[in-house]
Length: 341
Image (tube, rainbow, N blue to C red; front, side, top):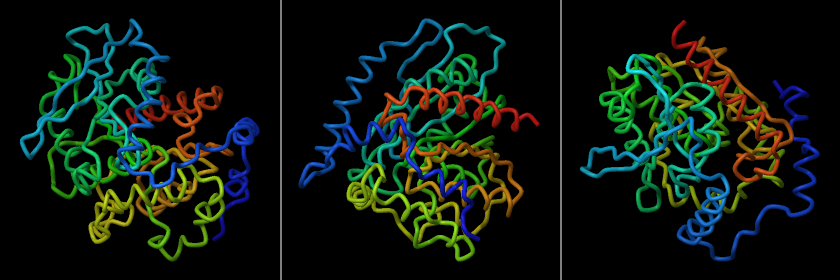
């Protein structure tokens, strides 16, 4: 079955984005670029954005914590929590994985969105600084994520005095971080862990590589070709990052959406997809796999005419960024209500 006209039309550039693209276009990729150079460039830009955003507002507290992992190392996580609470409060947690193609990014990414989530959704956000490729290729980030999940579930008071897994424990992320989050959800299930993940939040996630799309969905996967000339990041950059990450194509953790053990035990799932994103149809297909084929509660927000991770790449699209932030709050609240249902 071919995609609906609404889905196809979502690749028509939004006028606000179209104007930005015409005036500037995507930043050019330097010749012979490598991962250290990319990190330097992106971290510098994000540092300036962080300075502009400023410190935490008075209604929030933010701090670093260290989380021990299986090889004896400690990794950092940045905590977003309400500044006012009572000893009897029980607040849910969101373990969040930043984007960056498995090679870039820090625990401070998506700060503005995470602050709004904490304030409006009443959730404590644990933004994890998982270890990056190429120094730590697949599946290191997934193992870091699983170890962090276990630690915050077993030591909630060290995250925050009001943190309570029984109030909700959601795993989520953006872009590559959403792929890692998705893998952690399935690995936790596969290991028969007593830790109950109550929801997954997958924003603009790479979920099913085009060559692996199931036959019955091949006609539905058009976004990779439809958006090949506007894809952000570029195909060149995507291949550079994947080559550094070195995913094992034989591991079910590389494509959990096609897990050989199926999807029993996977929690309610909230997805976000962008109309101008080459990854768009991967989220749409995965939602159908979960919801239509397996009866798992799903929710999906689609952003027509906008590119991959637009709130990070194009923060000047203020009305669209605000809508996506509000949608995220509502999506997390929906996951938490699904937990209690």
